[in-house]
Picture 1 (spheres, helix red, strand yellow):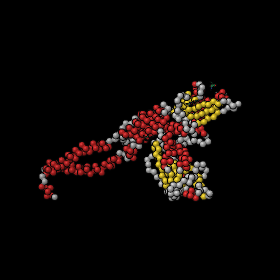
Picture 2 (picture 1 turned 45 degrees about the vertical axis):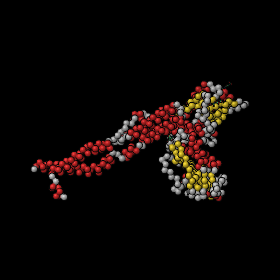
Picture 3 (picture 1 turned 120 degrees about the vertical axis):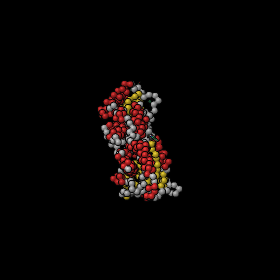
Picture 4 (picture 1 turned 30 degrees about the vertical axis):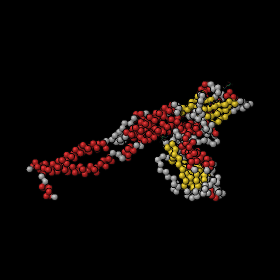
Length: 503
Ligand SMILES: *[C@@H]1O[C@H](CO)[C@@H](O)[C@H](O)[C@H]1NC(C)=O
Ligand SMILES: *[C@@H]1O[C@H](CO)[C@@H](O)[C@H](O)[C@H]1NC(C)=O
Ligand SMILES: *[C@@H]1O[C@H](CO)[C@@H](O)[C@H](O)[C@H]1NC(C)=O
């Protein structure tokens, strides 16, 4: 080794060193430095900060048209009723002023009672001294029939009666919920957080191993008409499963029948043993039909104090304990659960689904609250407002975060989601002005989705947890050895030049 070194001419070692040095310098200056800049310079797309800071829910206004069909209603009657309604509404709920209103209009030709709120007035002949007024709300449309006698009309009580019908029957739930929302109260602990997609999983949990079957087509057939009414609210995917050997963890009182206590319902679901995992990114709403083995001993399993033998689990789903009524068997003599048995159960499941989505309940004792379309309408408007508010909160938090952490980069994609969200909010507001509530909720849901995407963009989330100081820590082990090699090389070269000069 030493031999070959001495044979090499001195200038050539020097030249090689210079070449290496030059190469290294070019590499660092021409490639390394720009690369370092490119990977560490913070790109901050300009967010529409001013526009976001100006956002307010004050521009959101709900004005619901209600059409009156009173054969010879004078404009005067509509005007007088409107005044009476506003006075009553805003004295009871001052928070709703300039925010939520009902606009009374005269009915026009070719109205569709599945689209518009229509109130028909039927005037009945007078019977002796009695005055008479009734309300009937169609369960399948948005029509309401008010029947009254001339005496009521003459005593000028029609307006009063109309106000009462609107405020305490048709829009009761919506008014009180909006009033709560305006006050910043949100008391729904049952309702699922909103998603543009939910999985509905219907499970048949069988206590023992004896085969039982049901038709998943029956289930889809029972749920679909209802879900179609909600298609402006969210998407739903239905799936079904059957699981055996689903033991209960709770004591069941044995007697003529088996009784499950109300106090044991919270531990009814055997989360440990029953396979309920669903790793989908969309929320899952569970519906469980429990098939007890007592069925084979001709006993029923009954939930204490439950008319429908079912119960609801907040933000999770619904459960029904099934007691076989019809002896229908398949070819192997195993029980089949037939559609006729499923119908009442799915009425319960539907009503549980509504509760879990935040839909006003139909109060069994009050026939006037039963219209599904009206309830869905209320859910639509309430959700629109909630999404609008949440979307603004998220966008403002994004601005706050990027202002506070100026080390954080703002990717173009975040800007793009932000602009989309702002656009959705604007279109939502326009749809509300046009009283197109189904369009409004679609825009508000999109806005919520876009603002979430903007805020939870992975680059931003990463940086909040891995600030740029960490980058240096990553680079150091690489830069260290290279730098020391170059430095050693340079020092040696300089020494060489010096020794050359002195000789
Ligand atoms: C409607 O018109 C009829 C006759 O045209 C009249 O007898 C009745 O009082 C009117 N009803 C109202 C509420 O104005
Ligand atoms: C209004 O009432 C009349 C008479 O009761 C009825 O024929 C008509 O269909 C009603 N209009 C609407 C839009 O319901
Ligand atoms: C339903 O899903 C489609 C496709 O993912 C989506 O475009 C649409 O906005 C969703 N509907 C609602 C109401 O969120």
